[in-house]
Image (cartoon, rainbow, N blue to C red; front, side):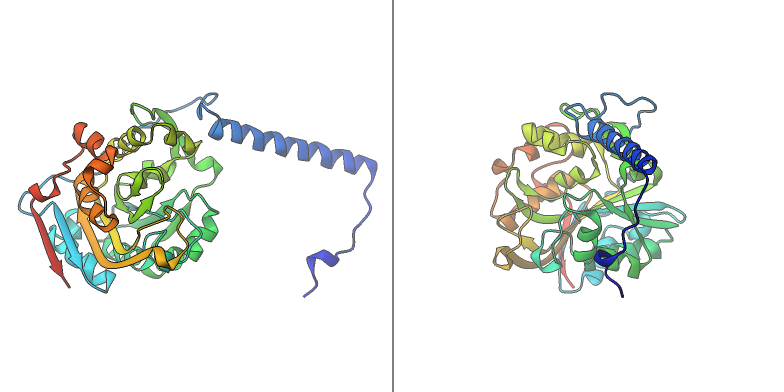
Length: 330
């Protein structure tokens, strides 16, 4: 195959040169406008049109079933199935014909063993369970920090989703819409439009250390819905995380603690920073779920201010032990 570096270059006229220059300037201006709209201090400053709000994706509470299920095991499909069955079955959460969105952590160009992203085997398992519940479509999406195509491919999540019959949805520039988060810090912000096109949302975070917020589990996983200058969250990280958790009320959450990045998060990279815990935690209360998962990171509720912030807003309870919960091994 000939190399792209050995092509014969054809001479161009002055008129062609001027036309190409004008086209390049137009493209640069367009890119600059996109950067302004989505990366300016005010990410929606010059946008008009509709402002969206999130629907409530939750199902009705049922006290016959536990609010938190902790499952230990080696096979993510068995573990996820057992967790869902204890909570009333996936059919309690997904109705036939539903379009479902699954939000893993797929933010980093890392391999599964490095535990920077959600375990692809768990993503595959949850896609399969949704398909078994007769979801019409199952989308898996995130807005990665690293290149999205490399992140989904190298993490193993892309292949896992395809194998289970789901679709990976990559958010392009025109896939962000202005959405009112009604937050104390985060108000109108560009959000992936996919969340406004589905019936149910499942949060599928990985448990790991975070250098700024101490941890990233369920509540902080919503960082990956946003476009714009997401580093602005760092200016008031705890209220920002609580804003996100208050905005997106998922159908259910399953936290991946099969491999836990205990140091040097959120990117990781060194296998010595990973602890194999072979556990998943399913629940409806993201505050309680995050509070339970702190044990894997040698943290306590007092170390993580956004948990108390979430509890104060009525998003859940930090005393996970006060909830109806079940622990089992499969």
